[in-house]
Image (cartoon, rainbow, N blue to C red; front, side, top):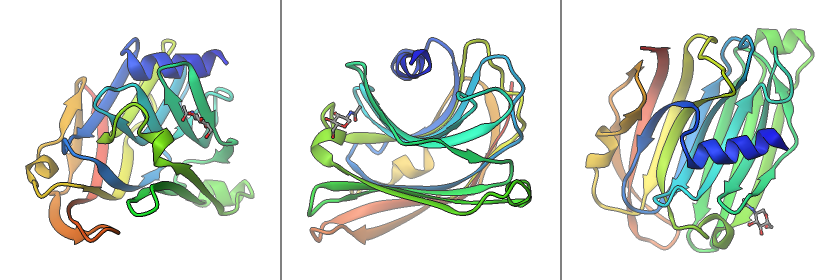
Length: 233
Ligand SMILES: *[C@@H]1O[C@H](CO)[C@@H](O)[C@H](O)[C@H]1NC(C)=O
């Protein structure tokens, strides 16, 4: 419980360290996809979280798929979370994940039905296979009325969140095959993400595209093949 509360507080108020890259199209985001590669296991103390997710401009809600060592030092677990500013959260059951696992994550709004699907698939790497891990698939559906109760989701975030004295001691964090789709014809946001706190990262050039949403509206997409959080400065 205290972990969940801490997550809520730190997500909304930066009480602890976060390293983040944030895309802000200033329009409703309808898709966020990324594959997160589980890094080395962090050493204690404190709690380490790594996640992609979506927030409204108000920052009063976060829709996120999170790996963390919140269930015990010395191991990563993974779950999907939704947290809002009225001390309310939903979290799926934790699954064990291991370094070099690839987790394919997708948040997708069907603009016709008004439903979000949050799907993730974990693929074991060699450490996971050795530990007997198998593929896990989760697909949950959440009404947009719940997801956007604090405003439309206009920010796509990639975050290392450190609580209770934790440090970024698990080496580089790799995201692959990122795609963000937003209900706008602007594209400058794709190539101008902002960063929070000081760290080095490397990123392939973002590629802009256009597609149609379920209602037939033209929307802008932003694809990034690789994004690596290298190290704190
Ligand atoms: C959790 O789910 C319930 C039921 O759908 C919803 O009313 C509540 O707003 C959700 N909380 C968050 C933080 O998304």
